[in-house]
Image: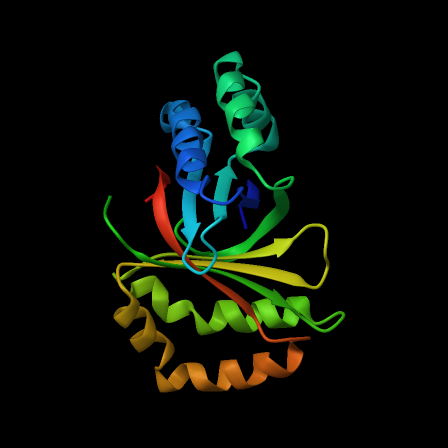
Length: 102
Length: 102
């Protein structure tokens, strides 16, 4: 089994702030589209909880993910998103066991 | 934005039963490999909690996912997996907002 660096993140926004946060997250992750190390970076709305966002990231390795997140152009998006959150993001580091889609 | 049927599932197994549960889940989902409606069905181990499994599913629509799960050949796998779980799976139905990988 080829190994990747994968994360499942659960973000909870302040009431009514989810759409604004999603716009910022999608905008900030645009550079990932041209980053060959980013295999999956999907942003989802929870259908039951109107304040919950799920973000799934699969990268070829942790270092490239860290480098991508450390780019200075991301900083303003992160600074605008943090005040929209109710709490710290729940970050689950995960290891691929198998399946379809990668 | 094209819409899909997507789920993020968190399963917690009884202590020491995760690998056995993952083997059963991967075995049971083999028919999805040849199912064009299944775009993603990835099984992950949580790296922090040794009893947690995450399963991410993205299907073109809910009906095809339901039909795939209702196939009689899946039944024995489900019946073997349930006793390995500590609690009912946490199932989060999610709606794609955007990103990379689909």
